Length: 470
Image: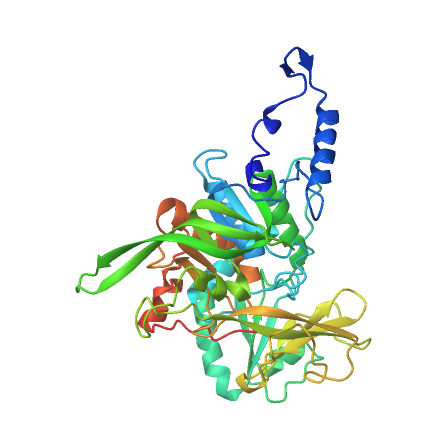
């Protein structure tokens, strides 16, 4: 590692001496000699001063079994489960590469932190049921010796979804699926709705579904920091930088119907260091693409989608950043402490925020209203006038069917995905991380079968549409 940083020809010999080494009968004064040598070299070299003993602690290792691109909750969850399920302690070396150590634009920290089981697909329901158990028992999973326990501030107030007359039948069928998967969800008529929540205006509401257990919201920043603290205690390495290149090998194969395909395997990841032109190559066996809204860019670096249109080689990862606004307002005469997260028939939603009569919420835009994702500036006219504050965050939006992408790529055989959850990645991260780790270590999904979320569905055109996205 050090010889990559030293000017050519200056590293050998100098760095192999140690304090107390004797040559020709004298004892080397290490600090003094280094100081003298540095002064001499500075005097003869043009330009900026040369620091021969440059700190390399910020550089990633030269080798790692697994490189995870993206240090949000999904990437950290994969790291956690890889270490928990490994065959022996330190059997797997895991490196997490995150370009923004502040997480200032990460989807995790800008989320409203909701969790619910009111989805239309069994896989999403199962993932969120497991996550609810994980969050409720967070310190059984993420406790670290001599560190304070985590307090996710989980508020189990539930989700309340409202449906109009035209959507009522669809809501009934979805709730039937949710109950079959073990979710505790009740259907409520307008009269029942008014009795339980007298502050609700039921005009235009034909039916409502209400999550009675394991639904509500929590502190996403606390989960992020808890996962990061735990995986570091398990030996996971971190690097602040950006993945700029993959070095891979290729193998030409014929399919069963005699079509030629090219299989690729990534051998090396190039990580450009933060605020620097310097990069570090990392040899690896597995790459996890957990780069969220930017995961399609990482996939493209690996050559995914470069083939002819309509072929597996030409199928791109259909994930892009979508900007979503969150607004905060003060309402002293508001619904009160037992308010669930409410999503009405227009797609607008709100929930209580804290104990001071504050609420937060927003609305999913139509395709025509989609804001420019080039920055996180807020359009204050999009929602309503009387708001105290607002922010924007990114969805890793799967334009194909708004569901996650999990598991290996069929052609870049050692790139695995954990991305594209279109707004519910935070709440499903514990289950997704476990599923990816199972696929890597066991060769198959074991606890929750997420094979419908494999990449191949994009080529086959097999949508598994999730109809409930808030």
